[in-house]
Image (tube, rainbow, N blue to C red; front, side, top):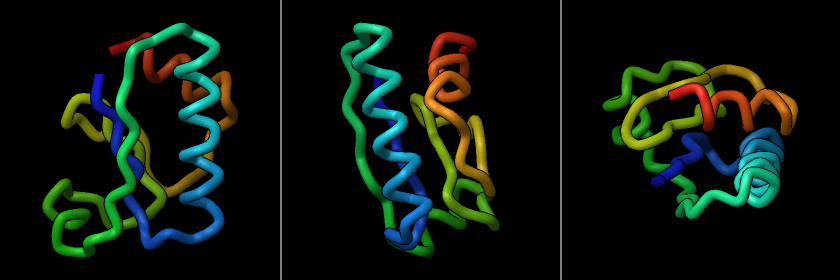
Length: 78
């Protein structure tokens, strides 16, 4: 599984990344987590509000910071 956190590197982006790492650990998943801060790349995903969560090249969330449980649900409901 490949997870990308799209955003400028702000506090919300770091929080989303931490919650994604925690969800991956809790679920026992084998996943790579990558931060993407390049604006043209972010826009290329169609994301206009960050942070955003991309799982295996599919945007599953943008514009808010979910709880760890919500991230886990997004990772298992794909």
